[in-house]
Amino acid sequence: MCNVSDYWEEVATEEGKEIGERQKIISQVVKKLQKDKSVAEIADDLEEKEEVIAPIYEAALSMKPDYDVEKIYELLEKNNKLA
Image (tube, rainbow, N blue to C red; front, side, top):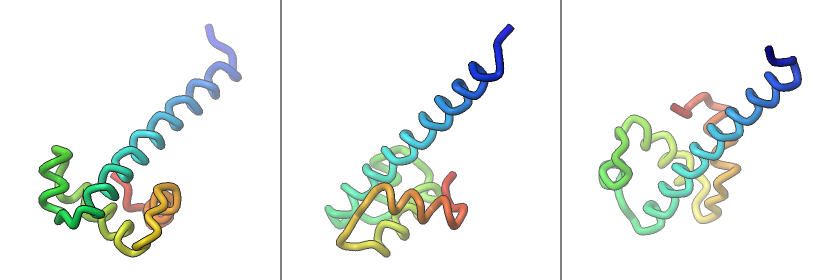
């Protein structure tokens, strides 16, 4: 039997992992965007669907040249565009 604090700690840990994974993808997209790769090329390189990469690409592009991963993540979260 687990107590309430253990449950919420587990929930917070899982949320932290998800945020980290999403920010890693954003970071990878930014690096490839800086190399002038297209959405299709980035999706292929990262083995993701274009539908997943396109919103990240657009959000990052809107912040050019200041590609701040956390700000891009916040923008995507705010607009509910993260997969």
